[in-house]
Image (cartoon, rainbow, N blue to C red; front, side, top):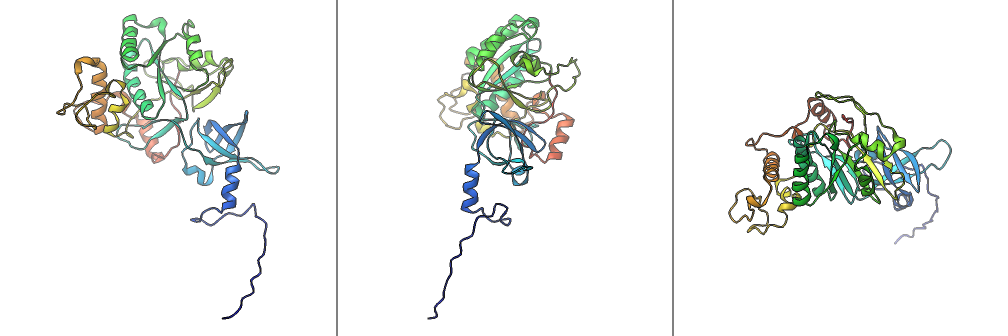
Length: 362
């Protein structure tokens, strides 16, 4: 048998080395990614992210292979900090999420769009003078929250122009019935704003709502230095005021961040299967039906007593169930349809956008 003399040569790691496509990174490269500092995203905008790292905001590039990863405000990420003059910070990893708030542009679209990640609660702002339409929007957001392990909180704003009987109905149906916390506020008089502020203590909170509910006015009161533009909104819509989701620290509170999102024109639930819907309604969660996957839609052995549930919530469940199924028996409400602009945007993006973009808001 021939003898082979083998000489082992030690070489230093080349920082500029990039493995060929389709190959895995070496152990040394993986170790370097593990050593990159961890932070939390506070804003996402056109290929760049702002990340909170050790109390400082880092502007990091978001390109290359990372562009195929969905990134949203609240995401915990790793950032490669500059090693030499002229080098830019860049994202190297997106860590596992503990919660997500997602929506689709339409009930018929299954590709979800990230609204925010790793948030503790979502405050759904309703306009006190349009509560009937607002509660339909609330039903949808609450389902998405429950599915994504985010606690829903109801905020009836514009209390100064609200109908007292309608406000009482919301408190009864969503507070007493569903078990959600219901806050009452007025950005005009300041009523209830302090209660809302203290509800944010120690939490990452998403504020969401459709156009004209006064969300940006509330954010201006919670974060005075932000000074968001506030538009006059008529019956046919208004100007854009919040153009991209971003997180802001709430002054005077400990570890309190509020994520302001663009006002949305639709809140689709096309990413949910029908067997996931019942579990997103707290009133239906503990029913002892004969079948564990009961849809509570008239099946034999269903334990649902329609008289024990507010008629509006039962109607909401059946409307959403029919919409998720794709049935034509129920007319889809306005929050389950994309506007023409948003439908075009979803088609252009191929359903792969990481987070929400521009929307109407006030």
